[in-house]
Length: 272
Image (cartoon, rainbow, N blue to C red; front, side, top):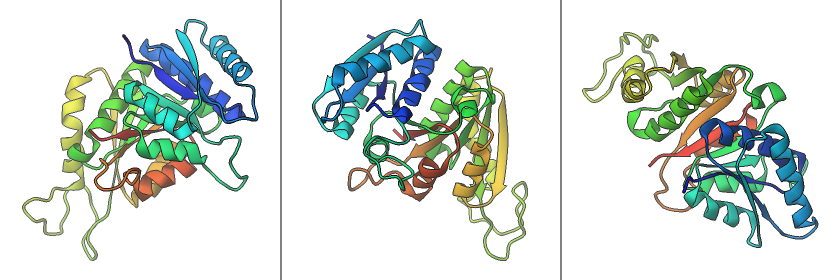
């Protein structure tokens, strides 16, 4: 059985935009789409599912579609479905979110705890409809970014678009700033930023030879580098560290920042 793309819906316009994106993604990868609604009162569940299903079929007539109403809380229901999903897709805002919150509480909780990639659909129509022709992935190193890189390469491959690999770095205080041939003394286990990026990309590049890769070494905080790169892309991909102590602490400050402020759909991919 092929695992589906799962999209959570709550009746908000943001969740219907997530349905549009998820249906495109399911067709792109040749997998089914499963629409999930967590019924908590206030909306008629079957009508909401019908609306979301019609929206999916309108934009992607060939999508293989199923749906479900859950009576768990939304975050728990989605996280449970994510254990056997290609990806979870969520809107950036929900019906119950306060006006001054930039990201819905359910989306943030799911992104922090899910076992599969979580895509929060953000940004203008140009970004959501993949009109810009690129995927951006943040690269820390080959160990920390391997799963995110694999996801990003597959996305670029099925979209037949360019992959932009961004590695943000900063030189030690007082060192001459150049990523290609740094003049500061490196300890034996340290590498130049260019070498870190090359090492991280070597394996996935060999496995996805048809993907055009643009390398960007940016001397700036990672948050700034990723948000700037995201302004001209269809999808931003970032990795999430494994949970070591408490559930939900693997997002980190950088991922929180991009989930709240990225101008495009953003995928958080847990490192396996």
